[in-house]
Length: 455
Image (cartoon, rainbow, N blue to C red):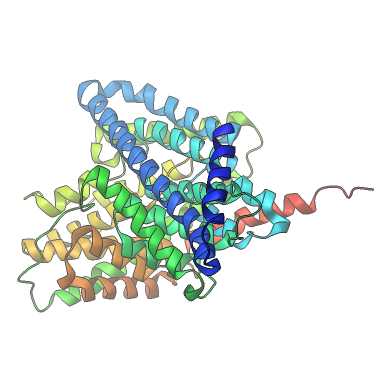
């Protein structure tokens, strides 16, 4: 604490010497965004490396002692769930709905409620719980959690500002943190910006565009400085495409969009059913059943049900093993459903992308498409399935575009997102994240209303 006090005193002296009041105010308002972005990039890189280690640990167990998973997976599911329930209930799941709820509740009246959604405790529990889930073979991603982690970092740094510091909008700080988190997680700066505009913001972007752009750049550059200028997936071959491939894009977008929306609907139904659980024993029974189901499928059917699915995506895009078996899309949907409904921490971005990839590769195999055409159908399936879950077609298209650096197929990917967004309405008019956001807000506001009035 002494270091923090001395740092504040030193900063105050430095800025007191700056004569230009406008320059001083701009610097003071920009500095928290820069610091938070730098910290976000560092934490995102550390989290990404730990996530990879955990996935490799699962793969080692699967290949060396597969039978152990029947013990390790249920144990990890229970521990990951218990960590969330015991220390930070709102660290469960993806983290994106929590950030969306925090943005809407970012007023003085609900400041304590926002602290339940974004905090250092959330950050720690989110990382540990999701890593335990992955170690046990949970079918989750780290991208959604990184967004909640980044939102927590930005909010905490805003709270640490001394009283004499120019006031910064809490809502803008959280929104910028979420965009920076996504940019650092996927190494997709444009995706982070589009995500903030399409999914998070209810405010005109002109009010915080400078902070948003600089935060995304700093967080992304920090991640690149440590991990290198990598692409999340790589450079798939999408040259020499057939003229009729647009019909294939529309077909896979329709199937993947409906399937993605249906998966989200099923997860929500299971959440409603689980809300009737009144005993810890019921939760543990459900966790063990989910864990054993995933383990049994991995052991007896196909181990590719395990993990986030990134390896599966790279295999179909960059190896001769391009065509998935007919049952792979089912496995890549079952896995996230059983993992995400556990109540532990873990995202659905990467599993959704991998599910879409398997739908695309399976369909391409049935149509006997060439390698480049197959790659395009796989990428379109990824965009469409993610859109079916999130209802953010532009974010999905830009994310996949930046993951692969294939600008020549931008119109194909946007077509896939648009078609998916339209057909997804047949299953549910609202996005998966919107449903969860309103659920969290109802829980928090109802909790406030249920408090007895003080005399």
